[in-house]
Image 1 (cartoon, protein in one colour):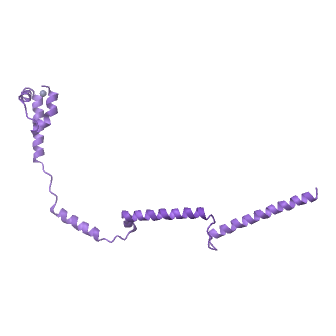
Image 2 (tube, protein in one colour; image 1 turned 180 degrees about the vertical axis):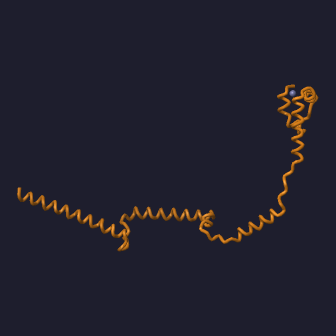
Image 3 (cartoon, protein in one colour; image 1 turned 135 degrees about the horizontal axis):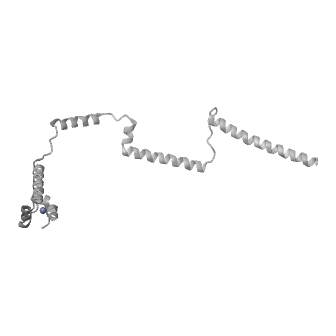
Length: 154
Ligand SMILES: [Zn+2]
């Protein structure tokens, strides 16, 4: 039996999952290196058997329950709390989608820009745009007059 074979099964041997055959026992008796490793494994296993998870403080549960009640009693007033509710967030998303959809559809069906209130920046811009179109027409008329003059006086 080789050292490598013994080392591979050593954790099982130390924990008792694998029985120590006379062949293995013979090697351990003859090989101090393997015997030393085996002893280390046995000590580790013994420590693991003794080890227990530490008990939580008896006040831990009490404090946790109190904290939970405190959080539950808090009024969910902040707007962030609303977004934490998945159903409401989903409903808002759908409403937003419908709103955008309506806007896009209306824009396609009705290409007329909405009439802005008088006195606002938007209405001023719209007036300027209309005037510009009007002035463009005047320039076209001027060109027409000039051409007629040229035609009358060659
Ligand atoms: Zn060995």
